[in-house]
Image (cartoon, rainbow over all chains, first blue to last red; front, side, top):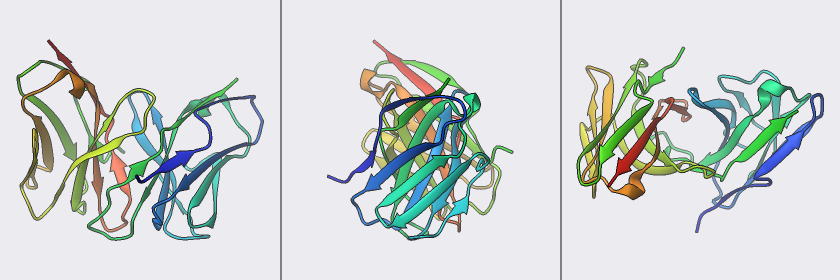
Length: 114
Length: 111
C-alpha cells in the first residue's frame, strides 16, 4: 500500500520558534509538494520539488523554506513561526509525467502557533 | 488570483439523488483535471480525473464532465450515499506538473 507519511498529526509551537515538518514517501516519486489548507481558501501550494536538491516556489512561499536532501523526504521549515501560519499542512507526492499527475497525500499536520 | 474556483462552498443532497459539484478555471493551459475527496482529519484522496482531450470520464457512480470552451468541469455522483459526505476539491494541472486546487465544496448527503 502506497504511503505518504507526515511526522506529526498535531503540533503546538510558540511564536518565533523554528518549526520543521517532515514528510516521507515510499513510492519512489520524483515530485513532492507542500500545501496548506485553510477554511474558504482551499489548498494552497507553498513549495514543490521535482527532484533531489531541487525546489520551486509555489503560490505562498513567504515565511517558509524547504529541504530535499533525499528523494523520499521533503521537509517544510517555518523559519520563525507566526500565528498566521496556524493551519493544516499537507504533503503530497506524484510520479513524473505531464499526464500522470495524480498526487498522493499524507494525513496532514495540524499546526497551531500560539 | 484564484485560477481554479468552486463557487459553491456547500451542497446538501438526499441519499439516492444526484450530486453535482461544479468547478471553473481560468488558465487555458491546464490540460489535466482531477477531483479529490477529503474527510476531516485526513489527507485528500484521489477520486477521478480527466484529460483535456476528453469531455467525459466515468468510474462507477462518479462521472466527470469537461467543457473546455466554457472552462468548466463538473463531478456527478449518482446515486449519492451518506458515505459520500466530505469536502470535494477540484484540481488542475498544466505543463508545470503541479496541481492547483480550488477552494472546495462540502457535500452532505442526508437520509
